[in-house]
Image (tube, rainbow, N blue to C red; front, side):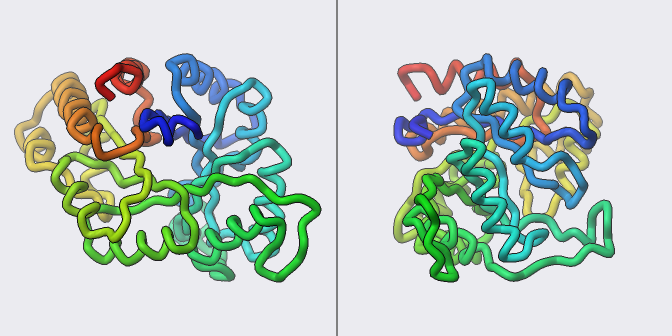
Length: 287
């Protein structure tokens, strides 16, 4: 994505449908694309719940001229399937990938499913970068090199994540996406501990109602600001929660502008008005 180098990338995460009819999903992503986003991200079975494979809807969007950033998780694929699926993505025209470990299948739709540990997340990154040179981990020669641009994720609230980020950089990750950021200084403090700061897209999330905020507050690894918790404690209305969190997050994104390469809107956000405001901010001369 050229917009990462231009420091104005704007990516919106989407959840593919849970059935074989893609029309409602495609209607939504077309509306998002019209806002001027850099790419549409497609999740890969989040929370281990079965959805249409990201390669399928990515292929449909590529046909319509959209740029895509599909997620690619490792723990539901063995080594052979990983490489086969990577080649399939490339044949479809996918050039950007967000590499993830993925969610434990025992917590999803099929608790009896096996978790596959053929490759670590670092091995997966190395495999993709090797494929870009025309070979693979087994030493096999491909009939042509791939051209993948590799992304990865990180959490900025825990010091142990520093080593993981450093190892991902060493393995060859091209850019990173943060967990949702609610305080500029927290991300800055984390980045200051890295030996080299890579290109970063800051993840943004706003909440449309009390139920959504309450659920997100229980997600492991997420640290909400005190003022967000007080919205729940004080029984604020859904309208107030939406307006407050939107204004708050837009301000954080503006503060982070000198230090990041763009914004990544989390999949629980489907507010086109919020996305439009971000698009205008990212397209302005001050960003």
